[in-house]
Image 1 (cartoon, one colour):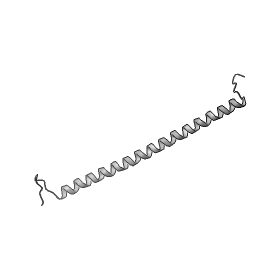
Image 2: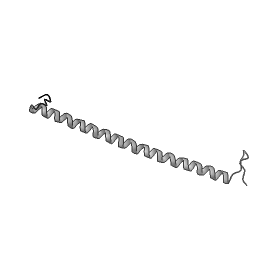
Image 3: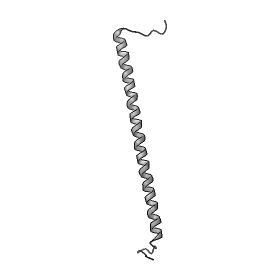
Image 4: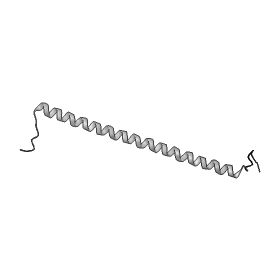
Length: 74
C-alpha cells in the first residue's frame, strides 16, 4: 500500500474520491448547460412579446391615421 505524507492510504480511497469529484463536475456542467438554455428561451420569449407589442402599437397608429375609432358604447 502507498502512503502519502499525512499517512492516508492511497489506492481505493483515492479512486472513490476522484469519481466523486468527477460526478460532481458532470452534474455542475449539466446544470450550467440547462441554466443557459433556460435563459436563452426566456430571452427569446421576451423578444417575441416585444415584437407583438410593437405590432399592436403599429396597428393603433394605422387606425388613428385612417380615422377609425372604436366606440364600444355605441
